Amino acid sequence: MTAGFLLLIGGLVFLSGSALFAFYWSVKDGQLDNLGEAAKTIFDDGEPIGAATDKFPSRK
Amino acid sequence: MNPHSLFSSFNPANEPDTLASHERAEIDASTRLPVLLFFGSAILWLLIGSLLGLISAWKMTHPGFLDQMAWLTFGRLRPAHLNTVIYGWASAAGIGVGLWLMARLCRIPLIHSKLLISAAIFWNLGVFVGVLGILAGDSRSIEWLEFPGYATPILFIAYAFIGIWAIIMFRFRKPGHVYVSQWYLFAAFLWFPWLYATANILLIWQPIQGSAQGAVNWWFAHNVLGLWFTPIGLASAYYMIPKVIGRPIHSYYLSILGFWSLALFYSWNGMHHLIGGPFPAWMVSASVVASIMMFIPVVTVAINHHMTMRGHFDALKWSPTLRFTVFGAMTYTLVSLQGSSMAIPSLNTLTHFTDYTIGHAHLGLYGFFSMMMFGAMYYIVPRLTGWEWPSAAAIRWHFWLVASGIILMVGSLSLGGVLQGLALYDPQVSFRSSLDYATPFRLARGVSGFLLLAGHLVFAIHFAVMLLKIGRRREGPALFAEPSNPGAATV
Image 1 (cartoon, rainbow over the protein chains, first blue to last red):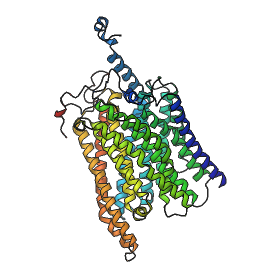
Image 2: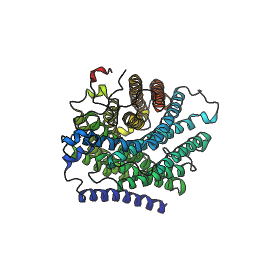
Image 3: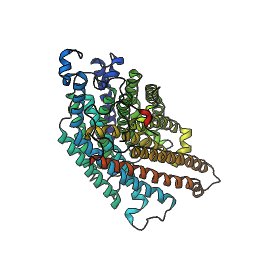
Image 4: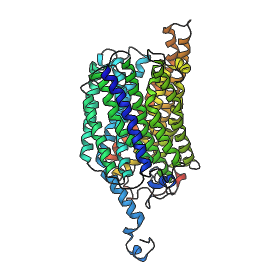
């Protein structure tokens, strides 16, 4: 039982620790520096902002 | 290169938009086999799972229905339904969507697809063995972990493969910003194998004693929703909504805040299932507080999705992806705020142990997550097969059948649950009579099961027809053209 609880607590520390580390990395790496531009990264020249990319199949 | 240079006019293949489209088409094509394997098997499990659920629901009002054989009794069918839809359908669909999104967001073609194909095979084998085990009477009677001990290692191997693959993909991604969807996916892919392993070790291989088992059980079961399904669903929404309407997320700042607050608060939530149980008060209290704190990530997502959609709601008429995704996103807000309210102890005493909780669970896993997955599949599959969905009518039938089905189901279970809870409060009403309050609503729930199963059948047939490439070929790698005549689509 003690081993079980240790595993659970250890797991919680690991879960929180991994999240904290990822947050630390994201700040250090400059991921949070320019959030306005970051939102546009899923668009490119082929599918630019303003172009819709889905519709119901057309009937022929 | 200047896009308007003389050279580019002679050689349009070097145009930036053409290059980007080809690169995207190449990435999509690289994900074809693993993603379609996960999607195809997920849809098969969805059909089996809905049938098992429908029979279980019918047994609630007709106890004599199919009670002649042990494997068809409620005690086996109901966990078989739960595990089929959780692991066979929802998880597999989520993995498929996750793989495709990872490849797109890492901006590289999918590598090590054999690892993923093995994962898909192990995954389905695990679910198959597990469901058969439950029907054979080997259920472990731990909610969300009913699969017998001989099935779980198979599933774990599949999870581990996917986790390892996610790390490799992330390592080799093209430099640049890590989009919010990728944060969500990465969290899901890494946290889940660990959640699953811990719960199995503490409950099955080296079981801890007494009521602590309940704590581990609900810590696990709630985190499956919060750290596995929720991040995948939101990753999909954060990609699909902006992409479909061609408008960046309203506030990227809020989306990052939402991700990190989810990571911070969600893993504390599970103990709110144990309000009133034999547990240290601090555990339950901390969980109630964390459940209320969930308002922060939920409201950030709600504001963001609504404000991104503002002025574009007509897109729901012409985009199947958006229609399902926005239904899912709205339901996410609703089900999350409902969940937070159900953690308030005074309300919890009314709703706990009634059908209200069952309604809440279906609203989350179906109204939110499954609808998100349908939406994502409508977007992804044509890009993998190079063919358009054959029938707009089939998509509409699918949407309206499942949307009305889930609304009827959650509505009836919630109302019936509250009446049942009030009857349980009343010392004048016997326990037996308290169930009578729920019966008509359970009948309505049974009817909703028919609607959902019918919707799934339409979807499954449509998907199969698409794989057989009946219908029209898609036009070029740039895929769908801009809706030239959106008004032509009827609701």
